[in-house]
Amino acid sequence: QPPSYFFVIDVSATSVKSGMLKSVAAAISTSLDDLPGAPRTQVGFLTYDESVHYYSLKSGLANPQMLVVADLVELFVPAPDDLLVNLQESREVVDIFLQNLPSMFENNNNEAACLGPALKAAFTVTKHIGGKMCVFQSVLPTLGDGALTPRENNQIMGTPDEVKLLRPSVNWYKDTAIEFSRAQISLDMFLFPRAYIDVASLSELPKVTAGTLHTYPGFNHEVDGPRFESELSRALTQTTAFEAVMRIRCTRGMRINNFYGNFFVRGTDLLALPNCTSDSVFAFDLVHDEPNVTSSVVTVQSALLYTSSEGERRIRVVTQAIPVSTVGSEVIQSVDSDTVAALLAKQALDISMKSNLDNARVKLQQVCADLIRASKEGDKPRTVSGYAAPPMQQHHQSDDENKPIPENLKLLPLYTLGLMKNVAFRGGTDVHPDERVHAMHRLLNMSVTDSKHFVYPRMFSLHDMCASAGLPSNSEPSSEDDEIVAGPDRIELPRVLNLTIDRLTSDGIFLLDNGVDMYLWVGRSSDPALLNSLFGTNSLEGIDMSQVKLFTSGNDFASRLNAIVTSLRENDTQQSLVAKVIIVREGDHGLESRF
Image (cartoon, rainbow, N blue to C red; front, side):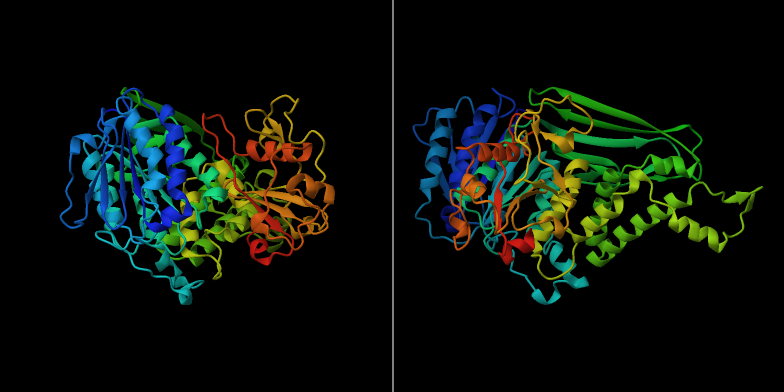
């Protein structure tokens, strides 16, 4: 089947006022030339508020034809052959539609949105071909199938019952997502809430269909538009495997126990992935199926069967042989703290949804403590001549406690503490349910490196950075590059500081990056010359921070900082992401609490 891209867009008054429609149209327009699969690529559009609007994009039309269906119960699809069209043949009509989209609904006063009926309509149009569907939603869907009601409850925030707000309130979205998965449709969801939108229920759509979830609370076209447009463009233009399934196998005596990520499990171990990209991440637990493994290595093999954007059916096989050891110290020495923390986070997310956040935090602590304890015990024998060894003497136990933590595990307690303080897991009443669910979704689908930075962000000292920071590095590539340089141009990074309050000084300027958000913390006694270079003012005291703009050029310091910010979001793919930098002034308690 040719690659298909179908866009389902909320055009309620909230979407219009925030500028979301303008950003959506701009991002899609800039991506059309780079969509995979040309000249076979097909596209289609559907908008909705209190009714569903189809668009005939048949080649040869002077303008796209809008077809409105107001009956949300007996929904039908008019002109089904002209709603999903070949992009190359209908390019002129598609360009006209995207050019007119921001102004088509500028006088729309409808505040409601019928997401459920719109999804059913989009499914009817695309079920014969599959592909990628992008949904853009600004308000809580309250009409037709899948209607949701506000269920915020501050009284249960921070209690074991908070998990009720983190679970879907209805089964409709999961059931619909399973239908989408069977039809080889992957759904990427972009949310722009200004109030409660029930991310817990809506997130079932990307979770089951191997899609992605993005949220932009309080979206503003001027402030948030560049970041959103870059993320949408990347999602549309990156190399994509369609109609994929994946199976993971291992050596006899071991078995795959749990899978983590966005997918639908067919049978017992076949992962259905309507779309799979270089950003897709899947994790699993490998457990003993038999008491002893007789082979010298444990082999793990994954096989991904997929269709390329050119229509070729391919299979990608990855095999890894892992040495087996009966010596505990050898196993401990092979442990990678970054990987353990990433997998531990995914396991704790699973526990939090099945029970509650308290149990997830206990799990994090327990596994970390058990691993550190085992690393200190070394290779003490557990049997003597076939009989159980006598219990250890008390002074031996004390000796174990005084042993240092092995070098490769020294950061694990720090990462564990970072996880417990992360938005996905931490207690208290200051984390909105929608925000927590989004953080959980991101963490579940993060790679090891992204997870490390999300849990334990990097804080760069800018006010005293060396003259070469922000410029291409002259050093030879090495294994330590991730902490020293960033981006394809190998931009040199400022020194990274430990995350302690003692590191923040009133005369300093610091950049905090967790891979999702960036915060620029500005001390009240910062050098006026640096402030003038970054903001065009000698002081931020008494200034409306919403009007402050960060300079990206015009002087050496601003240019180098912009190079650092840009490089931290760049990678080897065609479309790099744009960072949103949030400026935090010392003493602004609202933003400082987030920093």
